[in-house]
Image 1 (cartoon, helix red, strand yellow):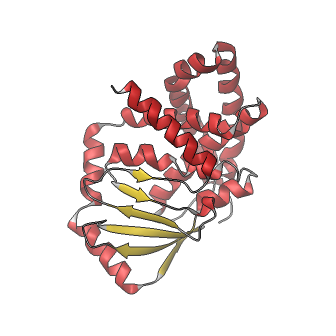
Image 2: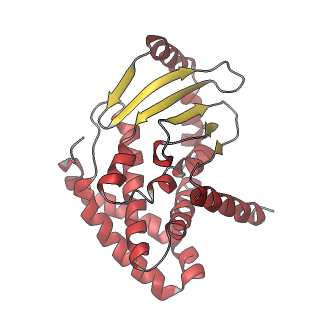
Length: 247
């Protein structure tokens, strides 16, 4: 998938969306790093993201809507990583900021929309489509994404998708940020929790595996892990902090 000019005409809107997210996370950044760092981070990340916008891949077609949303999230997180790395921070430090920002964004996502998306995801219509695609046994290609559909037994999971190739991962590789790629995969934790995906995932391409094994269970608890030790340690640490905050 070649970088598309699709987003250039939408740059102003994308930057406004970035500003909203930056405003949500500012107090948390200040509490961790101070106001001067927070000001520098906002200014430099915004500039980095603006430079990335023309380079973000764009997936055509109906399926592209969801995949493009994930690519936009990846681009913002990539910008945070690049700037924090320049400031001497670790990939784990950058990920904690990204994770908290995504949590806050999803908290403000209308509850009715969350319910509708979860309801549609596990609707009989979607299940029939998944069943048909799984029975065909073919791999489907959407830009740099290549997937294969799987049907579960309803106990361990209802249906799943194996990503044989991932456009988000390729985007990170192209940007020289392969170290941060396994962290970006953890964006699915906040998304699954907020949107009721019930996502179970044990391996990803960014971890060095041959696939990303997405498995979805209606009403299930998000269970996502990483085979990259530093990433797993980071998400476990964040999870402990969140558990204490929720007491």
